[in-house]
Length: 433
Ligand code: PLP
Image 1: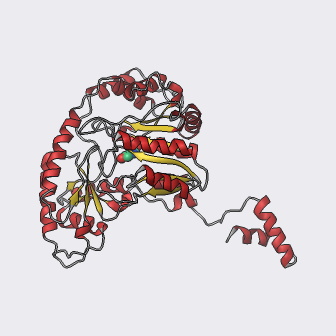
Image 2: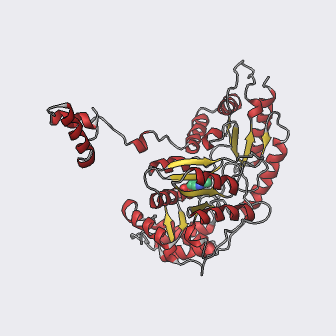
Image 3: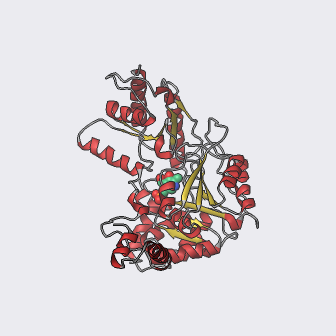
């Protein structure tokens, strides 16, 4: 039963004109009565589980059935936890540091974030909000900035959860695709300017640099040009820099900080990618103008009371220590191995990885080909399914990143699994006709 029928049944109108008048009055004055049988909100009713977390379940299911698995699926950092992180956790427990904290986080944790990002002196504690992962920072950001119907502009190949999180706050995600497609699939300042003009309700532009899934790094000039467009148009530039330590040649391009840019810049980062085995610790942080951080803090004071105290102690320990780039060096050798092996695989073109730990493959030349058992691969998703079913190669299909015809492979896995998986992939693609 719709809201208006429900009310009409309660108050039968005398004639059609009266019906119209009373229905108009109802629309404005009386809050609509929800369908009694309705279970979920429009915002969450269409939400599916995160594609990449789903892949983890696929891997577990295959392992349980003793089926072969080459797990290039979930982008999770592996290996051993650093002794500094372990010690931070042990000490917090042994000192019983388990009280509620300030909803924005412990002051020492917020100071550690500023130190880690070399932002001490530019920002103060009131600009930092510690959350339960970068995901929560993103939701805080969207909640703080967007009203129903506002537009969230996403750089091309957006990470899987950006659009669902925008939908959760009633905003409309729009991918800013490059007008001139290039090998790197990057969004340019010209593309962004055009998108803002086409979407007057744009509130923010979200860039992930280095980019998951493409492994591309926007240069200082490219990033500055995008930031400049945002500042000029008075929209927020949200920089998700979650993989910023994992850059292979050169360094992460820090955003330009000055009186013009600071009011429009929000940076999001976390523990999950730059350290080993830290995804499940659920720690992220945002650095934003004070009014935006205050709004996020108010929100956190209601929805979570902030991040877990133990995690915040771990964050403080990890970020105050000197960064050990052992993992980055290990990933660099894996990146080189992936590039060499991928170069021998027919029908694919791998983008050269510049940052993060993903190899992004254009598999459009395999679409339309037939598998050995006679099935035609109709899409990039079909290619991913074929690799999984035929050889146990788990990949994340590009459709999850709004770029059908591509596959993302996470190479944060042991070298022997990389070699075995990519040799199997070479056989799988060679078998297509
Ligand atoms: N942003 C990007 C680009 C990511 O790849 C991820 C996780 O994969 C997140 C945000 C969320 O990170 P977290 O696990 O810290 O919530």
